[in-house]
Length: 335
Image 1 (cartoon, rainbow, N blue to C red):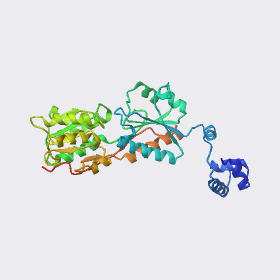
Image 2 (cartoon, one colour):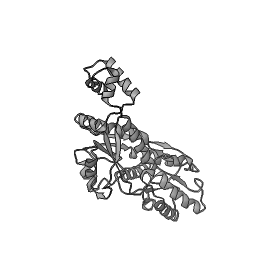
Image 3 (cartoon, rainbow, N blue to C red):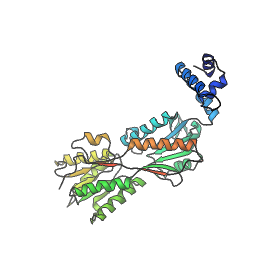
Image 4 (tube, rainbow, N blue to C red):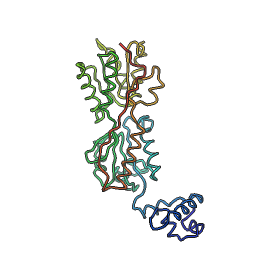
């Protein structure tokens, strides 16, 4: 492994000068800095993580707390895109990612204990139970925290504009002529509440009332619950003309039931999803949905967390809202 001493010999300067150049200190010339950095790159020098941690008082590692109760893990396409963008942005700033859980081998530990065990500088949280006591303990700790799609008043968050997104989706469906619009939403959460309230308010603004039986609670990213609830909606005396699903993946369960009943989409009934994952564009017909900016959310979350880690006293605690947009697709019929 190439050391600072090796670089100093090649450059003909002291070890201290090499160290200052690599750390971009101001008491040596720019010409010397450029020369040392060029030689370091040519020799394939990589800084020792332990030595850097001692020098900077930071591990340059970030904990990722991602616990998907549906069991889909990183196959959850929307959040996997968010985390991939987060990973790319964090690594470009010299940070490694560590997935946080409740076990190390056979040893059980809390999320906070795991973070301290790994010595992470901060944590990003997504797709978890934010009411979990261990999550709350972690949020209240000394660690820098950024949440995705959930708001703690005193922590930085990056959230989708779920209110505006649902309003635009419902407006599009309404303007296509639909008045009997059903909504199968996910399990209770701040995201669900925002979308559900926006669903009701948008139709109310159009002067439409929503029958109670048109709104059903299912699960995010779950085929079986949407299959069952779609069947119930189709068997109503006056079934809806359009069904909105919790997300694009869950919509596939509803699509399957509709087709099993010999109905066509959108000729007999219209459907819409939420998220804008690739699945929406490859299914037939293309799924009408809200395209969330997964890449933008991930990059922003990384930028905000690293800013908080490196400048804890001057970083402003804020809730960054990222807008999505309607993808019309072809699954909502013009009535």
